[in-house]
Length: 134
Image 1 (cartoon, helix red, strand yellow):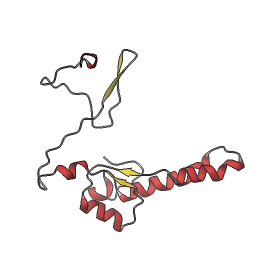
Image 2 (cartoon, one colour):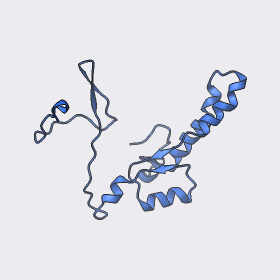
Image 3 (cartoon, rainbow, N blue to C red):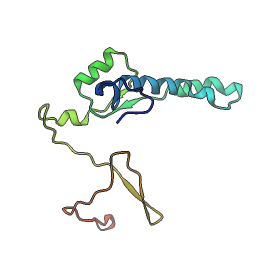
Image 4 (cartoon, helix red, strand yellow):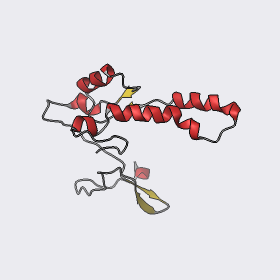
């Protein structure tokens, strides 16, 4: 998936997922976002500091090589999520899975909340659990 903030260059590792260009764009937006806020003059410095202190956490396909590349480029990342890389058998096999929350029941109605590419799916091997009975 490519974020619309990243102009495509035609190479997957430069265009798709979490890329250095995307993280730099996010940092810039965070650092300057306060300038668009309607604030009294005495609150502008506090707002600027607040935005500069927002930390960036990146996840999705990070392993030692990708982290090294980001660090060498000086990408402003504060925390790397590396779950899958810790469970990888080799470069071709992965034995992990995700358990995204894809819908919530709000006021008796199911509401889809999945990110693009994810959706509710039936699994007939699973059985409902009543938490109150545990």
